[in-house]
Image (cartoon, rainbow, N blue to C red; front, side):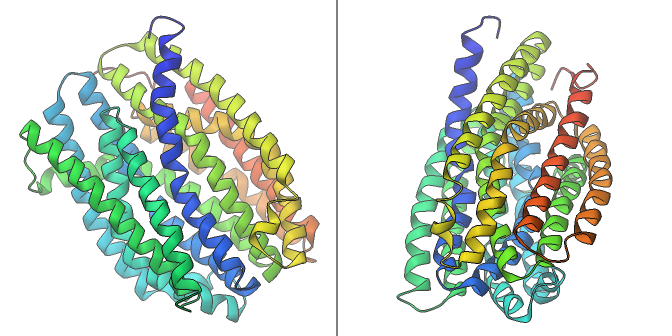
Length: 440
């Protein structure tokens, strides 16, 4: 990446399909929110609790995509495609085992998990139904993460895009049919998503297996290598646990405000997730390009790509924030007929919008460091940021007993402070050269 044109083209070649792919998962939740929201405030609030639990279960293991992308990309940069595919298949097997175990735990303990958020009994009933059904799709969700990581490591972000578009289309149709004509309520939304996720996993696995056979890679699981892949992903697991803890604790505080603010928080968090995945497209490009360039020993190219991606991250955040700010009074009407939910959501979206430039920089830096395999430092950074965030959250909970619109808005200001803490910590790490480790 020695000239000023090629890095932009290469980043966009990876980031644009990755963007369209990444927004598919939050679009699943947005579709569920819009469909379930018209069942009433209680089902929508239940979906908020269930989504927090499910996203935690899935995102805890996001290292299956991130770690696999980094390892595969490094092997590709070093000119070792067979080793890259072998590492990728280890990740797929690991996803299958973890997914089956996590699904069982989630299904059995759905109600205790959802009750931890402190929602009302009616909301808890709806959340438990959604989680128990959705647990069946968790293995497929994790396989999608691992298979997507393999393809991204090969610098292929278009194939996951095709799978995501097909999955989202099927999901929306099934959710509507199962919720309303079939009369299944919130359970119908969960079943529609499970079926769509299973189809996505099947399609991506077919692509990965075909590529593996062309390269002569063994499809059989190798327990030693799979355990090694799990051990290598441990720092990213710690990093993700700390990150998800921040999201869960924020939702816990929102649950104390009452059903309407919790429902509004669910939609605001889903919209934030949509924006996060959109911005994370640049992080995906960062993971793939950083892994490949460091694998090839190109430190200068890595630094140049990082500088350019940070520029893209900032301006993408500005643009997305501007769009949400312009629509903050319109979007709430798509998700709920309840005026209390709409007013609280509109207030929260103002803060969501203003925080997007910070988020853009955070996601790029996070992606670059993941691509460099700097997992241990990321784990330390994220735990430290969580510790700094906890007093802020406790102060918000202690001084927002009324649970009004201002309470939810203050909660989102505190979450924006959390993102600012992340930016400072990641920036301090990226300024050093200790993460620039070359070779496969």
